Length: 260
Image 1 (cartoon, rainbow, N blue to C red):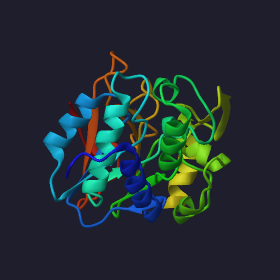
Image 2 (tube, rainbow, N blue to C red):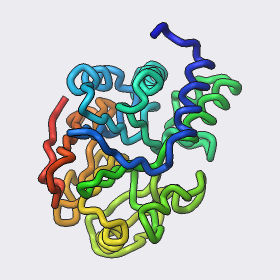
Image 3 (cartoon, helix red, strand yellow):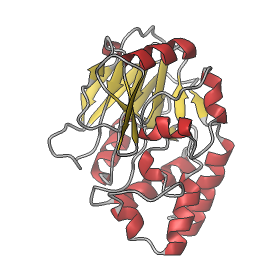
Image 4 (tube, rainbow, N blue to C red):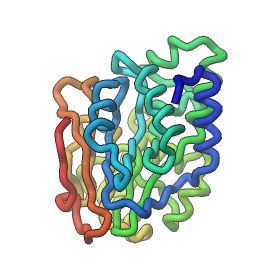
């Protein structure tokens, strides 16, 4: 496919996102690859595509494609182009750094280097990104924390900018007991009791998420996995998580973690 101009790419990608549910139920794949924040690390994204892009594999990117790293615009345009070309195999979830339409934030070097018209175009497109993916064998994947809704399918009804949306995209986990543990700089904090209650409500075994580069990799009896896939934080490995979708999964230890 020839390289599309910026406006056409954003329009086509936005139309695809608008057609997808906010909660994507993965089916028809042998495996899923979960990719954490890439934050302008175009090299990491290209390595992932070169290594894992196959017809039987779903590639699920967990948000935060821009800011912090040196190639935010190139990374995002590359991902959007892949989505337009291969909509069934590439899934892009929304992270907090895709939420410029809701409110400005810091750091935001990608957004601040756009002119007002570009900001509006990108913000409108990325506001349509889905919130989460689920698998039939017990996995749930999203960017931040679990939203306080009653049923898994209620994720489809979460409104952009709402409290539940902020839990999804901005929420942090603390490796401690408790439900709501307060708010730190606009990031709602949650403990193990909230995790266990919501996972029971949703009927899921394992949560795969990103957002916190310095969080413990495994939390809550190994049922919560945090991965990060960007060189923007030099002390962290660029990791992906690989899940077989035709095998029973009880904990995140059942997933394969690979370094890029």
